[in-house]
Each structure stands twice: as structure tokens, then as C-alpha cells.
Amino acid sequence: MRSLSTAALTTLFSLGALGGAAASGRTTIEGPVNATVIRVIDGDTLLVRATPWPQHSIDVYVRLRGIDAPELKARCEAERFAARTARRALGEKVPEASEVHLSRISGDKYFGRVLADVHLADGSNPAGDLLAEGYVQPYGGGKRARPVCF
Image (cartoon, rainbow, N blue to C red; front, side, top):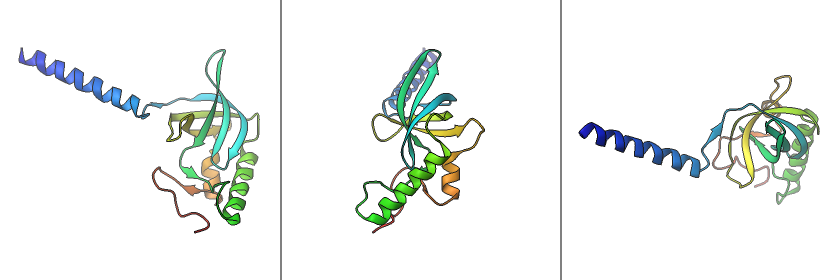
């Protein structure tokens, strides 16, 4: 009887832990999910048409994992200029109609957007390129790096 109770408690605990992870948006889809770029939104966000299943697609905003671009709506012109430059650089790396592969897809802190690793068909990583070229800052969640203007 004791082993039955232990098994039941273990099962309930496991189900509770899974439910909490799903409810908090911590579920990750490993992918890859193929997508077509519709538009570059800013230096770290794309609007894509993802095709998770045959004959089914969804338009979704995708934040590139691991980077943070300057803000287009910042208070000072220097940051807005840096933001436009980062958006232009991302657009050159990932033009409209580009085929991309999304992996490690998870919820983002903003509703309606997902966070994902994005790779081009040739395997290149635009987030890594933008970071290496100095257009964006590394970002692992939490508080942003100091803005251009302070």
C-alpha cells in the first residue's frame, strides 16, 4: 500500500510540475519549424509565416534568441538611429521571403510573440552575426543592457 501511495504522489507531483511549466510558458518546441519571412519588425524581431504541419501555416512574431536590439521608440535620437541601423542590418541578412528554420521555440514575455533560434537555409545564424558585428547586445532575459542614451 505504501508503494502505491508513493507512486500516486509522484504521479500527482509530476503532473503538477508539468502543468505549471505549460501555464507559465516554459514549454519549448525543439523544431525545426520551417518559416518564410514576411517582414523585419526591428533589429531582433521578425514576422514569419511558419508551417508547423503540412498545409497549415501561422503568422507569428519571432524574437531572435540571445540578442537585444536598440529600441525604435527610444527617447533619444542616437538610440533610434542605432535601432534603424540594426533593423536594416537584419533585413539585409534575412530579406523578405527568405526561408528560415526556427528551433528551441518558446513563449516570450510579450503575448503573441515567440522566442526562437533562427537559422537560414545555409545554416547561418543572423542573431550571432548581428552580435558579432556590434548591432545588438547579448541578452539572456531579465533586465536589458544599458541603453545607448542614459
